[in-house]
Image (cartoon, rainbow over the protein chains, first blue to last red):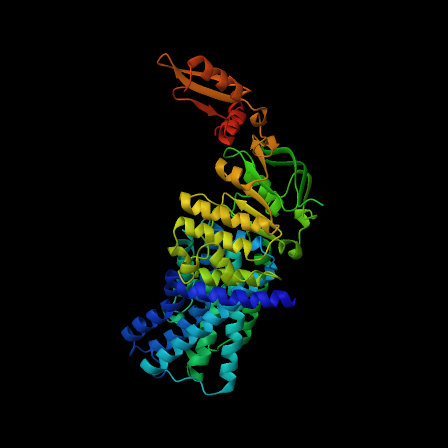
Length: 266
Length: 283
């Protein structure tokens, strides 16, 4: 067990170096939400979302933080692991005296560190340029913490499971990115959720991102803004149930589906 | 106990029998070279020994352990250099070698390993900026940093220039002197002759010859080809007593024999002769 943790910690370090040095992954998984925040925040800076003086840039910040969960975990892993399967990384690791759990610990550590760094930058940009007020109550930060942890866990496990879908590393981003984009459009990231058609809202409710964005709004928008939610409340309890459900489902899927070797090589 | 012991190893992919009832032993401290055409079953054999693939039948022991059940303690005693690796591109040579040392209980000093493979000047270079030969030397560094008892080298010098290959051979000889057992797969006959204590020729999934490089096939029979010029024509003859033949020739031609050469079959000649008769075997 000690060895698993020791090597897991070593893997976190090596994963982080590779994540930030790879230009494609650093831009696509890490910098993208900041770029989008600056663009959307600037274009819709004054646009109201239908509650008091809450602007779309504030609404969008919550959506970008929720998207950050998806970028650093699901999108990152579902693209990086097929590449690792192609370029010999996974085969090499199998030949090393490393418990397999250390590899997964390394990925989880990477996801959490990358997310924390990303949120820190997003919030800094939000406070400095878009007049976002950081929540002052401990309760809201607690919500932020458990929503982030559950979101990262479920989406990390789903990313591990989904990493078997792209056949080759090269085409992985072309498969994964559209999925993330569709979820963002339907989950209240790029549009205000209560203005979407009902069928789209129902569709989005099946997946974690809708619940992540809603919970992040409960943290970063004023309390009364729950009036513009479809149900009129933040539904944090239901959000927890959905995320725990996806965490369990993701765990089972990852357990059943994860592959160390490319398809076709027995 | 031998480092590697293989009895009746067979591995099929669907209808294709990739490895057909192979048996061989590798003693501790020995270097065995596996030679053979592409698709002969070399890589399948090594991958079974490394634990990446499971045999359909046969008994395999690597350092006394069945690779199917080889745990982490067993893996810690192996060094594996695979055929094609493009991973770790975003790390530097030093970072990669140091990181790999972390996996092993009693690793070599990473800095010494980097020097030994001749990458001292490249220690701070990113791995994706290394040349093909440098990249291969990094792979070898990662394979030996764990101080393995048994080292698998799968075509280690492909893409090396002649000077780099000779440096690499010197490195492997140092490892051999340290008592490391080596299973080498290669296409280069001169490499096998220089490094291997014994050579096993695999073709069509079977071992068709296994012996010391100097004894392989008919090399030990002492058959030599003598060629010379006589009456303006090129002449040649095969003999098992070339010295006597040349003396006789000198006497007959009255002194210096024009264009005299005595040629023993090289390992390559012997190897090509061995695999040439096989169905579907191409060198």
